[in-house]
Image (tube, rainbow, N blue to C red; front, side, top):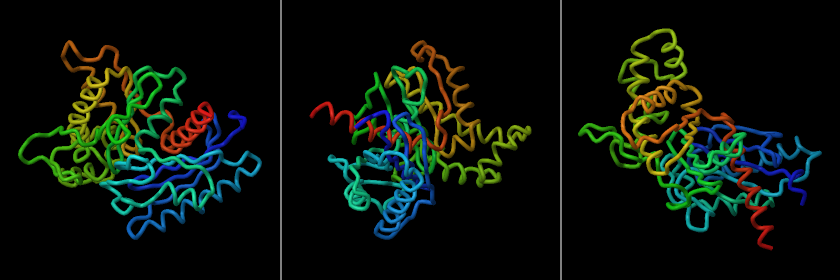
Length: 314
């Protein structure tokens, strides 16, 4: 197989949207489809959509080599063999579903599963012209996740990823918000899309974060205060992440940060102004390089890496 000419398929299953794309070995998207993530039932609606999107995208890239492998980024905790999800707080209907085997069955293509955060992190790592030596990527959407890449290797010490960043406790007050995981004060309970919408309603603001972003730039003090309050726990969590892994670069992406970039900018400013002799020197906080395609590009490139690694062992 000529690795330069090969194509791969990336799948990004999120709490709100699901995307499938055919991607070349350089990470360029050749064809893609997106839908609202089907929920409930036995998962058949999701699998049927993936099968259809796969064949539609194959048809649109007919002149290209057939995909050598599929990579799927999924939210939650993967079982040890990485063939299914055992726990998915925001998509409980996929728990126990043999996703990998079902995708192989419907497409006839070698498939790997990985966490959605790892997939997005790998895509962002590969997209940077100068790959950071110590890179972390945080995705903020329906949930909050993160992955870490050190010296071009994905950190996999907890359920095949670098822990459960979205469930760092960032608020220890007695009235801290309850998280879908059951704990209180988790970062996900404070800055995820549903959490921000709930907080906006409590502050008598429009729950559309696009609108909050717009009005904050127009001088709305309440919108600015809202963003600043949300940036506090995010800055705490990002510093925790940087201290834990001594990262030199942290990328931030996901649906929330795409629509409310001031949240990441404000958190970065809080980190820049923070005191402490152990604060990582020169830490860079950057917004996504790939935007909404981080997950599918990263999943496809993880599949490419899987094929390369397997070839070296043979």
